[in-house]
Image 1 (cartoon, one colour):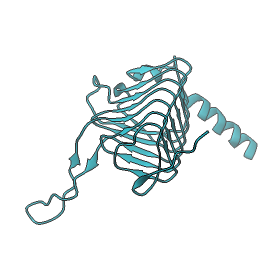
Image 2 (cartoon, rainbow, N blue to C red):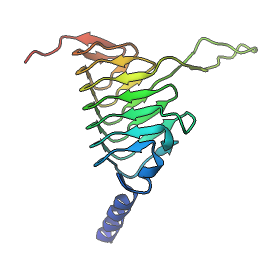
Image 3 (tube, rainbow, N blue to C red):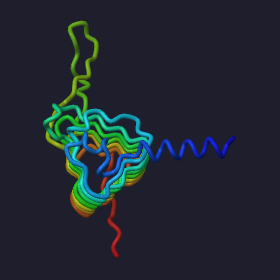
Length: 190
């Protein structure tokens, strides 16, 4: 029985995987050659606002919340980007992952934060979205497992974000940061 169920699960994953040229790929703003999104997926809200480059590898349990009008692209994933399992993108203003980036398993990347200081008329705390500039992860940057990157900030080219870090400000190019909140560490020399 296990073999039969394993074979069924494998077939299901193969059928639900999105590859360039598939009918589901046509729902995106663009879906590059040799790119794929593995199944199963958690959510794929508004794929019309998502552009995926060539040779992109996205693992299972992807969650994309592209919260924009369908004709506006708010999530751009460059060429040769690798995205791990259980990654969540929340894009209102814009998120761009340039070419050759890596995002490890279990990360949340959001271009917005919440304003926790606002109170309503009854004195209850409200948490409206705090909109800012688009979030940008520049070419060759690597984001470690379990990271949270939130707000309109820039992760510089070839930077490394240590596992389980919370990034709340810009990271210069060729920089290693880690922690909560993420702080600069000495960058290893070759």
